[in-house]
Structures are given as C-alpha cells and as structure tokens.
Image 1 (cartoon, rainbow, N blue to C red):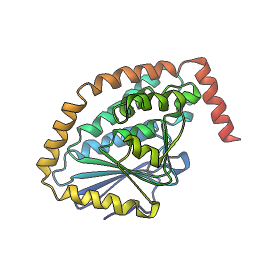
Image 2 (cartoon, rainbow, N blue to C red):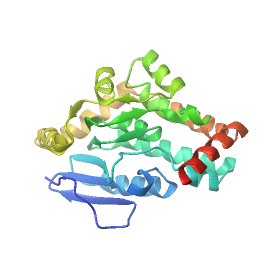
Image 3 (cartoon, rainbow, N blue to C red):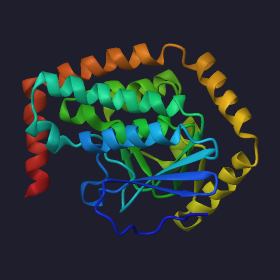
Length: 261
C-alpha cells in the first residue's frame, strides 16, 4: 500500500496509483492545504480522469503537512473580491463535492490535524472518513462573518440536525472523539496507525467486484441524497452573497493581517 510520505513536488494536487487504489494528495502544506481555485480545478480534473478507470476501486483523499484542510483560501478570495468570482468559486467547490458522490470508486478521507470550514465539508462529503486522534473539526466561517453555507449541506447530511446547527452557528471546534460520536467520521486511530486502518478498509473494498461497488454507490446516493445538487446550488449562491458583506470583509482582513504579523 502507498502510505503517506513527504512528496517532493510543488504541484498543488498530486495523483498516484497502487493496484486498485488511487491517492489524491492536496499539496499546499504552507497554506494548510486550503482549497484555492486552482486546487479545486485540479481535483475535479483528476476525478474526471479517475472515473474512467475500470481498475481503480478506492480513492484516498490525503494532504501534506500538519493539517488536512483549512477550508477555502481566504487570501485568494480577498484578492479577487467580486460577486462573479465568488459565484464561480463556490459553484466550483460544489461541483467538486457533488462529484465525490458520483464517482464509481469509494472515496476515503484520511484526516489529520485541522479540518475546518470547506475542509470539514470535504470530510463530511467523503464516503468514509478515518482520522487520527489529533484531528480537530469546525465549521468556523461564522467567526469571520461568513456562514459555512456550502459546508452546511454536507455536515447536516452526516450529523443530527441540532448538532449541525450548533457547529454552524457557534463555529466551535470539536475533537476526534466527539466527531466519531456524532457520525462525522468512521474511525479514530493514533497518527502512527492511520495508514494501517485506511489500508485495512481499502483492502476489504478492493476485494469486491468493481461493478458491484460502482452500482452500490450509485444507488446509495440516489436514494439518500436526491436533492444534493439543488441544496449546493442554493448554498453556493448564498455564500457568494455573504462574501460581499462589509462586516465579513473587515473580519477576514483582520484575520489575514493577524496571521501575517
């Protein structure tokens, strides 16, 4: 199996394969693996390519560095601050999230460190999520005046409604133990055992017939998430509007300035 090792590449998204498994790495450790427009575009392009493979049965989503994903790239968003850009960006993110459910392969998120905002959304939208015991989760956009509208689509379909509401309206962090308790993730293991646990589950899945896996995933989401696309369309438009609020602009700029100092 292809355990996670440091990747010697400057590419923001890296795809590798090992037998029936494809590994997709977000490679922006200095940016806490934030989902820039380029990263989202590359992820979608890679998924389109992977979906054509008859051999691949499992996709493992990973990231380099000390965090899984800190959500959208706020600095890039503020540098391109206009309604058209936000409409395009959040629609692109929604396209990526919906694509995860449409893949014939099973998608496993390998989560370590922080998974916040759209990073928490990515955990929730994956078919299976396995995290290390140092993982932390939050839909923290509300703290910057930007409600996690699109993350709310995935999170509210993973955890009970009142728990999702508390996460979304408070922006509080939750630890791995609580994330498992509420159903956001499947398993918690030590950081050193993370790849072993993922490999164990991946091997069980790859032992099954490809057509059965593909058919099973299609029917699972068809019956469970029938209105997912409409929900994301609504949420993406609302989030783009939210980014134009003056108070949101000020809070994000203050946050970015604080990080730079």
